[in-house]
Length: 434
Image 1 (cartoon, rainbow, N blue to C red):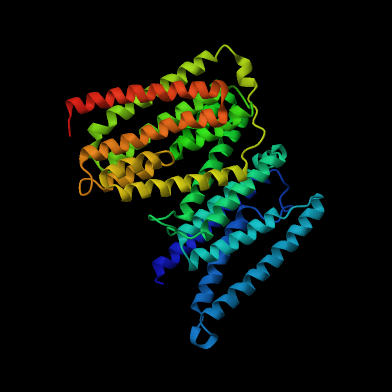
Image 2: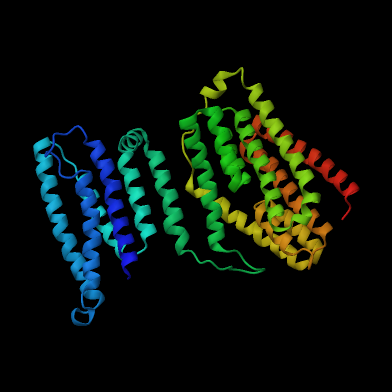
C-alpha cells in the first residue's frame, strides 16, 4: 500500500468516527461536560484508532509472525482491549445517570471495527455501513414508536416475509426442474414473495396513509412487480369485507395501468422496432384503466364511510400465497409445453397461457425470438395476446375470489380495456401493417 492510499484510508476511518460521533454528540449535547462516555471527539479518535491499529498490524513482518494469523491476533487483542475500556466507562455512565443502555458502547465498538475495515477492506462498504449505522442511531424515536404500535400479526407476517426472502430464496435451486424446460423453483418462490409483498404493502399503506391514498399507492407500487398479485390481494380483502369493493377495484385498475405501461417499457428497451405496433393498444388500455379508477374514486368521494371502513385484519396468509405460487408454476409448464409442441402457433398459445401468470417473462421471451423464430406480426400478436390473457384473468380472479360488486367492477374495467385496446390494435395494424 502506497502513502497516498494509506492516507486516504485513514481519512475514511476518521470520517467514519466523525459521522457516528456527530449523531452521538448531538443526542447528548445538553449533558454536562465530562458526564458522558464518548462524544464526537472520542468517536472520531476511535475510528482513526481502528485504522491505525489495522495499519500497524498489516505492517508487521509476516514471515516471522505467521502472516494473516498475526494480523488477526493483533486486531483481535486491540479490539478486545478497546471494547473493555469503552464498556467500563459506559457502565459508570449508566450508573451515574441511573439508566440502562449499551447503545453508545456498541456504537463505539462498531466505529473501531469500521475504521479497521476501512484500512484493510473496501472503503465504500465501510463508509456505507457507517452511514447505515448513523441512520439507525438517529431514528431511535421513530423505531421505538413503530415497535410500540406494531401488532403481533404484523410482526409475524414481516418475519415470515423476511425469512422467505433471505433464508428460503438463497437455498432453493436456481435451475429448471421437470419436463418442457421445467420450472425454476427459485422463480416460483419469487412469485410467492411478490404475492406476499404486495399484500403486506397494501396493508401497511392503508394503515399509514389512509384508505384512499394507501390503496392507490400500494396498487401502483405492486403493479410494478405484478398486477396479478395486486388483484389476488384485493380480491381476498373484498371477500373478507375489508373495505369498499369499489376502492379495492380501483386499486386493481391502477395496477393494471402500470402493467400495460410496463410492457411498453420492456418492448421499448429490448425491441424498439415493435413499439409502433404494440404501444398504441397498450397505452389506450392503460388510459382506460386509469379512467375507471378515477371514476370509481370520484363515485366514492361522497361516501366517506367507505374510506373509514377499510381495515385489513391480516397482512397475508402464507399457505394460500405459497399454494397459489405453485399453481402458477404449473401454468408456466403448461404454456411452455404448448409453445414447444406447436411452433409459432404454439408460441402464441403458450403466451396466452403463461400470460395468465407472468406478462413480463412472455414479453422478454417473445422479443428474443424475433425475427429469427417469430415474424414481427406473430411477435406483436403474442405479446398483445399475453396482455389480454392477463386482463381476462382478472375477471376470473374477481369472480372466483372477490365476488359481488368487486367482481362486477373488475369485469367492467377489464372488458373496457380489452375493447379499447383491441380497437386501437386493429387501427394500428390497419395503418401500419407489419
